[in-house]
Image (tube, rainbow, N blue to C red; front, side, top):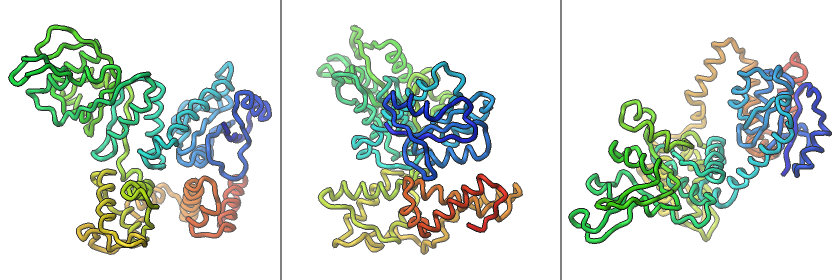
Length: 464
C-alpha cells in the first residue's frame, strides 16, 4: 500500500523519517508529498488550525475522492470545533497524535481498512454495475461497501425513484461474506395485496384460506440464511410493520393457518423514496421499526447532485446496448444537452433516453443532434453561458455582501477551477491544462504563484 505524507507547520516531536520507517514495517510505503498533487490516500499533519488548512485538505483529497487522515500534533493544535470543519472539508478522519499510546497503530488500522474498502469500490464487480466517480457517488459507495463487507447490519437505502436502490441491494447481498448464503429475496411492498400480505411474508398452510390448495413458503422462509430486500418499505401498513418488527426481534414466525413456530435469520435490506423520519413524526411509520431497519442508512444521490457521472453513465449504457463495439463519440451539442437536461427519473430515465437515441442512430460516426427524438429537442438553443446559473450568482452575491473585493473573487475562482481541473485529472497537469484551455506552462505559473502567495501573503496577483 502506498500513501503520501504532508506536514504543515511545526510537527512537534513527530520525526518524518521515524514515521516513514514505522509505516514501512507495517507494509505501508509512505513518501513525502512534493509540490505536485499525487492521487491516492495520504496523511496530513498540522501544528495549528489556519484557514489554509481546510483548503489543503479539500485539495489533496480531490473533494473527497481520495482518503485523507488529518492529524493534529496536539489537542491544543486542534480545537474541538475544527474536527467537524475538517470532515466537512473532506477529511476521512481526524486524530490528535498525543491522545494515543500508539498513534502509528491507529494510523495503520485506518489506512488498511480504507484500502480494503477502496479496492472493492474500484473493482469490476462494483464499477461495472454502479457507474460513477463523482465525490458524492464515491462517498456513498464506500459507505455501502463497508457496511456490506464488514458488518451483517440491516441497511436502509433512501433515494428518489431511479437512483439504483435495487442494484445497491444486490451489491450488498453479493459482498456479504456469509458462507452458503442463498439467493437474494426481493419483495416489492407496493405490489402486496392486503388480503394476501400475510401469505407473502409468512407463507401459509394448505387450506388456510380459499384457494390455498397447497402449502407455500413466504419471504421469511425463503430468505432464511440469506438476504431479504423490501423495496418501498414505507408502503407497509402499520399492522404489517408490527409483524415485521416481531420477526426481526425474535427470529420466529408462524405460517398463516399454522400452529408451529418457524425460525428464520436473514439480513434485511430496505429501500424507500419517502422520508421515513417524517413518516414517524406523522405516526405513519413505527419508530421502533425504523431504528431496527436503519442500523446503516445510505442516501443515494439524485443525478442532479452527480452531474460529473452523466457522460460516464451514457457510455456505460451505450456499451450495454452494443457490447461488441466501443461507445460512439458524442457531438458537443449532444454532450451539452445531456448535461443540461433534467432527469426526474434519475439514472433510470437517463438509461431510457440513451436507449432511444441508440435505436435511432445509424452509421459509424458520432451521435448527433438528429439522433434525439423530436420531443427531446430543446425549445431554445443551449448557450455557453448556461453554466452561470443561480447557484453561481448566489455565491458571488454572498461574497460581495461579505465585503470581498473583485481581486479576491477573481483569485478564488481561478484557484478553485485549477484545483478541480487538476483533481479531476488525478494530478496530471497536461490533461488538466487541456481541460482548462490553457497551456501547461501557464498552469504551472498559476500554481507557482499560488504557492508563493501562501508563503508571502503580500505578493501581488500579477502572475495570475
